Amino acid sequence: MQRLHLFTALLFLLAPISIRAQAAKSELVGEVRDQNGSLVAQAKISVTELATGQVAVASAMNGAYTVANLKPGVYKLTASAHGFKQSVREGVRLTTGERVRLDFVLEPGSFTETVIVTQDASLLRTESGSLGQVIRNRKIVDISLNGRNFLSLVSLSAGVAQPPPTTAGPSFPRINGGRPRTNEYLFDGISVLQPEPGQVAFFPVVEAIQEFKVEVNSPPAEFGRFNGGVVNLTTKSGTNDFHGSAFEFLRNEVLNARNLFAPATAANPKKPVFRRNQFGFVAGGPIIKDRTFLFGDYQGTRQLIARVRISTVPTLAQRAGNFSSSLGALLYLQANGTISTTVTANPVNVTNTNGNSIQARVGQIFRPSDHRAYAGNQIPINTFDPVAANLLQRYPSPTSTGAANNFTRIGKESDKQDQFDIRVDHRISEKDQIYGRFSYNQDITAPVTPLPEGSGNITTGVTGLTDTRAQSFAGNHVHVFNARTLNELRVGYTRRSIDRQATQLESPPSQSLQLPGIPTNGAFENTLPTFSVAGLQQLGPSANTASIFRTDVTQVFDAVSHQRGRHSLKAGSTFAGSGWM
Image (cartoon, rainbow, N blue to C red; front, side, top):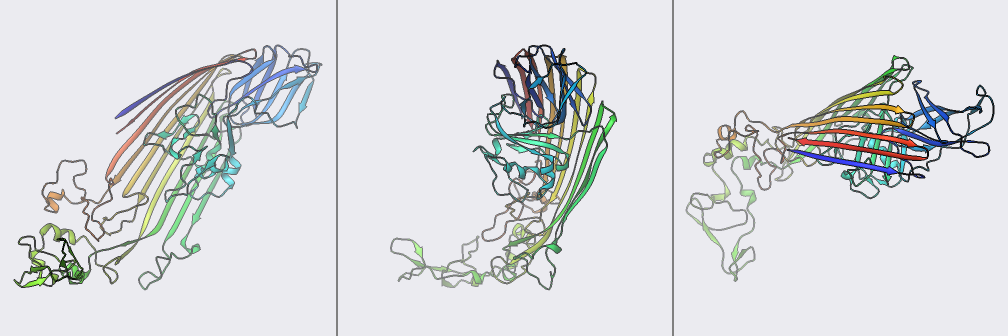
C-alpha cells in the first residue's frame, strides 16, 4: 500500500512581523542605526561561524537585515557602513529553530576603527510567538540516561508530560496536552516519523546531537502535518579542528539486588543476569579547512537480561491421562431445570466407561465418541488424539508441585544494537553550500518465551526474534541569489523494516502435526499455530508474531526567502510520500 501527502504552504508576512526560522537552522534579524536612532542604509552585516570559519553576508539596504539558514553554534557578527566605525559582536550563540533579533548602533568614525562588544544583553526572541525550549549538547551528554535515549530529556521543557517508561525505553511525550503519537520529530530538518502510526525510525547517538528544541505551542507554519508538538533536532557537524571521543557504559548484575521472583536455589544460586554494555565513538574535523567538514559516530549495545517466566503446564498425572484431581463437587438438577452443586433430591447421574451409573461432578471428562464419563476421570493414553498427543510433547514437565503456575523458566533475553551516522558539510562557493547525512540502525532482539520450545504468550516487549532496521538520509542545499534572496532545498528518505520470527516447525502443520485444514502456501507456512488450552499456557506464539513489514517516507522541501527593506516574504512547498508493505 502507498499513501501520498502533498502539502503546500505560502507564507506572506509583512512588517512588523517577519518570517520564522527554518527547521534545524537559526535566523538572525535586526536593524542598524546611528547614535541618533536613524536607520543606516547600505550597511553590511558579516556573520562568521567560529567553529568552521564560514562567513555569511547580508545587506541592510534600508537599515534592516535578515541572515537565514545559519547552523546552530557560536558566531561573530560585524556591522559596517561608510562613515562609521565597525561594530563587532562576539560570542553570539544561535540555537536550533530560533529566530532572534540583534540590533547594532554604529558610532561615527573611520571604517578602519572597530568597536568590539564582548558582553551584552541576551538576544531577544521577539520575532516569533512560538513557545519552546532548547536542550543543548552539554546537558544531553551530562545527564544520566537509562538506555542513552535523548527522548527522556524532552520532559525538561515546560508543557511536556511523559508517561512511565516501558521495557523498550522511554515513552513518547505528551506535548501541550496532545497525544503521544501526534508529535512531529525532525532530525536535521527531515521528519523521521513513520506511518505506523507515530513510530520514530531511530534515535541518534547522544554524543552526536548538537541540540534539540521542543516546540510546545504556535510552531512555524512550515512544520505543519501534525496536531501535537515538534521535536526539532540538529546533529553535529565537523569543524576546523579535529575532535573525537570514545565511551563505554555498563550495567552488571553484580551491582544489582536480587530479583524477588528469582530466589537463590540449588539449581540457580546466582543472581539473574543483567548485563548491558554501550560503547562507541564520535569524531569530526576538516577535510578541506574552511570548506569541507566530516563528522561520524558509532554506538554498539550488547544487552543480556534474565527474564522470569511463570506458566501453568500439565502435571505429571495429567500427562498420563489422570485428571482425578480435577473432580469437584457433586451435581444436582434444580427445580428450574438448571444443573448446579446445590443439593436437591434429584442428583445428576451419568454412565461411565465401565458401564456403571455414577453421579456427575464438576470437572467430569466425557469420552467424545459415546459421551460416557471416563472412569475415575482417567483417560487411557492409548486413546489420546494423535494431534493432541503430539502437542502435549511440546509442554515441558512442571518444575514445582501444584496444578497452577507450576513451571518457572529463567532465560536470557539478548539485544544487539549497532548504529552509525556520517555527515558531510561542504561550501561550494560563497553562494552555495550543501550537507548530507546518512544514518543506519539495526536492533536484533531475542526474547525469552514462557516455554522452552518457543511457545507462550508474551505481553510486553517484542514477541519473537526481531530484526529491526532503520536507514535515513537527509540532504540540504542553500543557494544565495543575492543579499536579500535565498533558496533552501531539503530532501530526505527514511526506511524502517521489521522482520519478526515465530516458533517454526520442520514442515507445515498439516504434515508435522497431522492437523488437516491448514494452508501450505501461506507466507509463514511452517509457523506453529496458536493453540489456546483452558487453564494452561498457550502453545504457539503471541498474536501477530510472525510478520515482515517495511515503511518508507520520502520528503522534498523547498522554500524561497526574500527580504525587502523591513518587509519579509517566504514561500515554500513540502512533498511527503509514504508507503508500506
